[in-house]
Image 1: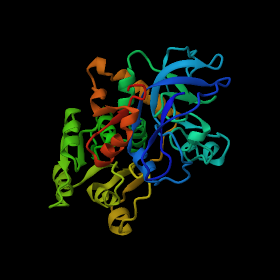
Image 2: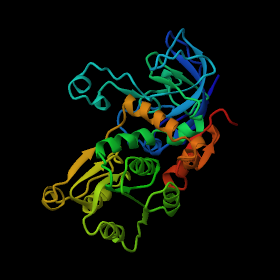
Image 3: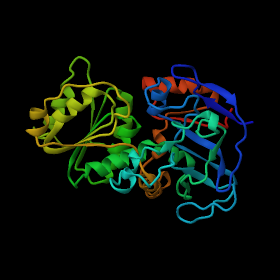
Image 4: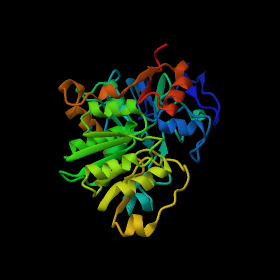
Length: 368
């Protein structure tokens, strides 16, 4: 019986349990997990901050593994037959209906009320439907892709869910060549957004964070300026952004912190007529007082929310990794990973992610 890390309830230690082998259906796939990630969403799950989570769950919504068995002939989205032994990954979002108003009219499938997410909205009672497990069962219809040879499993998981999420935010930002881009927060999403802003032709990319260690990593990826938030001078980074932009502010500011006060600060760092993209607020962390006249309308600012990803972001992420892989010496994606953990170390991994002592934590469930 495979082992899995089970989050039994909010604010309880994660337990490693033996669970039944998956029952393979026609069109289903069983994969042996090579890597799964630990991200901020998992910390929110630990503390019960997301609605509709059917505890107990097996977390781990972005994963990559080796195909063990398929339920008959199964092909990926490119029409390629998926064979045992292939290295494969899958979109964590499943059961999007493509039949409701959001899917058909609004063209906003990330708001489909029927969509479910591996590692988040499937119960452990329903099977091995999360990445913190030695095996993962991919239900019939799950969107699967085999990795191209240019992209290693480690490179893929280094991008993880942060890279397609950031890609969605960059789409929303509509960066133009020469734009000054400020990224608030240098966790995996913020760092990914900064890298993508550089690839999009930004004239200057400025990254802000409270952790110096994260800013060092951002510098290694080529960002132009890094600004540390100082407790003794909470406006210093705002003033520095204005100084670096001749008093105008950024053309585009991307919030990737999940902290309410960052939104107010970000609006003050964005130029008149600029674009402000919010991607970090995945859970309800509270309210902030904003002056609609002075901080939004008078400045003629365009505020854009970014919720989740769809398959296009997932697919394009892999194409991006293929083009800018470690092997090509373009972008050393794997260096984003701070540490790898075993299933038995999962509670320590969650602590490390929550405290910010690691930038990217990954799980290797089949390592002891």
